[in-house]
Image (cartoon, rainbow over all chains, first blue to last red; front, side, top):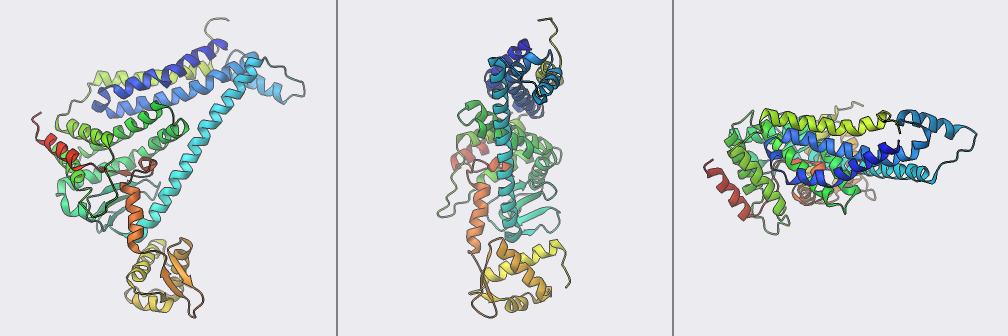
Amino acid sequence: MTTHAIALAILAVVLAWPVPMALVRAEWPNRAPGAALVLWQAVAIAGGLAMVGAPLCLGLAPFGDSLPTALVAGTEAGLSARPVSLPIASFLGLIVAAVIAGYLLAHLAATVVRVTGQRRRHLELLELLSSPHPTRSRTRVIDDERAVAYCLPSGVGSLTVLSRGLLDELPADELAAVIAHEEAHLMQRHDIVAIAFRAWHRALPWFPVAALAEERVAALTEMLADDHARRVADDGAVARAIVTVAERAHIAVPGDPFGDDGESAATVLQARVSRLVAPRPLGRLARVAVMTAALALVAVPTVQLTLPPLLPA
Amino acid sequence: MTTAPTSSLGELERAVMDTLWDADGPRTAYELLDSLEDRTPAATTVLTVLSRLEKKGFVDVERGSRPHRYRPTAARAEYMAEMMHQVLGAERDRQAVLERFVGGVSPADAETLRRLLTRPS
């Protein structure tokens, strides 16, 4: 299984830097955000499998040819009364695998707990500071003159929140676009992807790829939601809605501490508007190629972790 | 004791907080009951609501006086600011907590966006 360990280690390195950076810099994702999002998730899953799998295969190499048989043999040996002598490389491999897996899972759990707590608090405030929308279910209205729209994913109790300023400012078609956009976030469970990539970033804060990946994935989910809105309103209405809300999100209120989000936020908005004004969807063949690549990416470590080597050692 | 369904309990919580926030001083449960006349809640329901609000940290109880007097722990504007900060602020977790349609941009960036709309494709 040492060959597996080496192959997985190479995959882990490739997926840690070159592939994600290429994906960050590529232009095609804006033209096929759904496919790009699937590819990003494949990179994350395959990367995680490779990062844990490489040391794990090294650690269990003395016990068998493939990971499942080695796991069984290793567990049996561990549970038996006989003392087990392990080469130092294997011992280290097991420790490293356990540490990496534990570290990543711990950060995921911590992120889920933190984010759920913040959502619960926000929900408490919303219940007291907003009123139910007169006609739409699971929609609340906040009494703020700024144009604000957001959704609070909360499982069954998910809510869409609109401000009075938004309702007063937007014409009917743009309002429909905004509402459809938020509903897309809830229906497509973008919050799951957001939490996963947030946890990845928190686990590796010094790693630029993790921060860039989180940003790119967030931008892609916005574009996906925009695409959903295009089914309800025409492209122009969605684009106009984005611009109007951007202009009215911060009406000058004296002492308003909310500065703008910075350069990257403006870039994402420009990309969102541009792709609506002049859509250039990726061709069918290209999209199929992306999905195939995503599948292959996850298949490689899966195969490595479940099957013995094709060639005898 | 009749138990109100949760959704209307939520509405009652909001009505009670609105009354407390608009009032110029602490109120007793009976004064609150009076001001909520149009909803005709039971006295026990109002006490339940006040107890829930106290647990969530929105209401302070002055137990020294008889009957107990209730007041909000902070002004409505403070909670509003906290809530809006979560939506518009730059908290790192925000993208995972809630998803907003558009974030804040500078007036210059907003103008750039407006110009993008009219650019010929």
